[in-house]
Length: 261
Image (cartoon, rainbow, N blue to C red):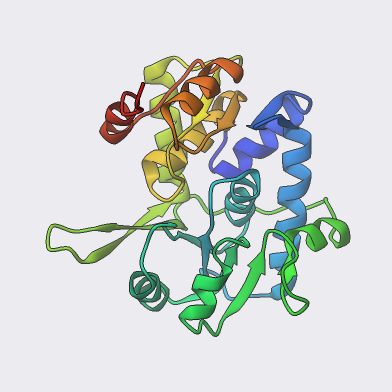
């Protein structure tokens, strides 16, 4: 019986290693490729020997590396804290302090914001940026792709932050079991299948967006990443990537028809 997102990934690797897991523009990643990179990053975090439950932030633009970082941290005893990329400096600082984030994974577009708030914790970057910072590119070269762990289903997996009615930021704790149950319920309700291509349109900072990743794993389907900028790009994404499942927010529906003729 599968009890965690980590076990979903292991199951997909065993049963469908050559199937396409992730689509990013013209690049395709198989379940085997994703699994290997996830394991290498998880091994990097294992050698840090951080206390169980350590909070690790992910602050970046949407990308394949962000998905890999999410799955890698869900393969550890640590807790992910996604940080929305549009937040102001004081809001980022609040989340870091409130959650007690000791490590942040980020990309080259967000590193300046981290520097600006004088963050004193560990920083890991997607791409090489500075000599003193470890990057995923280096980790993929140096760490072993073999990795095993038993995840406790009721342990904390993610803390998402949203704004309460009073305008303050509220953290919501989600367990590994909650994530798995969410993927199972949505998959059954929508009757998702392995040949589905799910649009990764939503941000991976809240549970609704994260569920796109987990439903993909649950069904051994494909996730096609997209960042909504212009309506024409959005419709090109649907056609080019042959999307069969599309999760939306009301704002996306209104934006579809905003472009000037």
